[in-house]
Image (tube, rainbow over all chains, first blue to last red; front, top):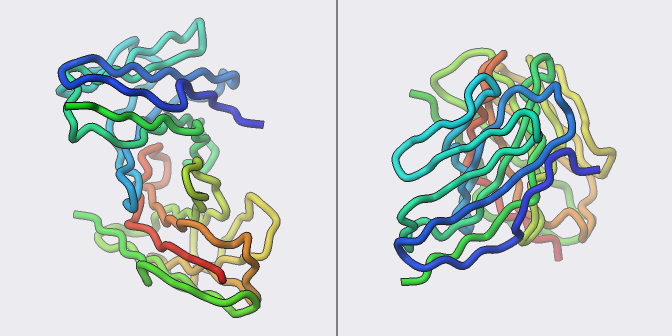
Length: 113
Length: 112
């Protein structure tokens, strides 16, 4: 049973547009929510992460929005560029779990020129 | 700075042959180490994790095993490969108590 549900499965956005990826979780013990970016044939790279004591975190064009009561978090990619075309994974972990991450299924983002 | 290495980068092996994939981390001590498998176009499946030398926990019962002979070395093995073992194998590390996990470049395994 997947503990983190991610949508959509794929996304096409025009250059300059906003990409939005959503994730939902059930386990209220989760206290760390990272996003990873993966290019074909490469390992995932940590992009940005948030803890539940804040509702939003922004790093450059990437923003995480976190809604604790709804148990949802999302990644917004502003001013999307063709170089952002990749697969994005959300994940969640909890304390005392040896750092184990529960991953979403991934979203393939394609940014058209 | 920390660096994680995996080798080989690609591997083609016949069914029934043994497997050994290696992962090493530089620039840190006593990391937590993880092995994942990613099927084509799919998500990441945690296979094993280790919190110290000789300490291995298995997440999914299967044809694979893992070992940690040294603090910063993690090995994934199989005695006899199956077709279903094909995939992209990823090693990752994190500092104890930290949620931040960093991945290696991966090994593409094709079992024929």
